[in-house]
Length: 316
Image 1 (cartoon, rainbow, N blue to C red):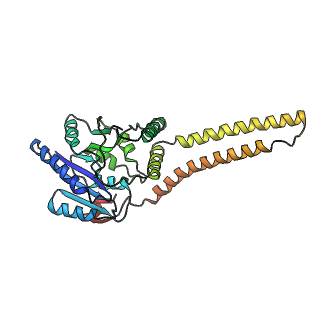
Image 2: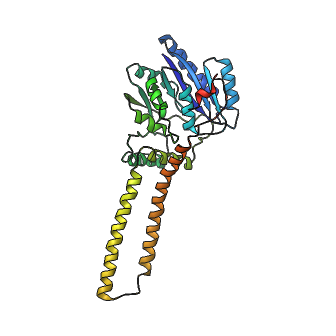
């Protein structure tokens, strides 16, 4: 069985060689069992010497393939490029900063041999800040009530995918991609195991609070239209409340006559309704924006340098 390691890289010049040494040792352990390995690195427009390091690794090891983007297109585009180029019977998707322990690949292969199409590594949240842990759990509990697929807290991109799962994911050509949801949507037999959270060996995570927030919104909107339905229900409820309030005002005017007081009530109602309207417009705008990007059909990424012979094969 040929195993493809797909690892997106962004400013990882100080750690990528250590990562490659780790996965090489795993490859040597699996070789006596009849399993070979290839390494697919995707440079997501790094600003450091990541590309130079990848080129040096490719010169030293013929199993190394690299693809470098013309700019930073994001991790989702890097994952897509890696899956497009991976030719293995199964693909292991993992980060290149060693937060995903390479020694777990052997366990993934063992479970794959038992017939599972997806082997998902779910990290524990030991060592995480309390606020981040609580926020993540609340987010997944909330999102799973809305989305059409089940998103597991702690289960990220670190997983093994069989060839038919990879082909199924590549057949989904949408521009706004949320891989965690796509992996769950395609289905197939899956199993999950836990591992202890590893500390990043070098540098800081490129995920900012804003990036995490946008990622969470993508997960919420990519697999359901319930926010639009909720906006419709909210609008109908507000219309009903407005009708009842109007009837009450008219009735009070007929009984007691017209009264001047009510300024605070009017201002409060106008402000609240304006906020609700802006929220609903924002929800509608999010979906409209996604339609806009899908309609343009731009490529998910552009390649600047690669050791792949046919660059056009990488562009979906």
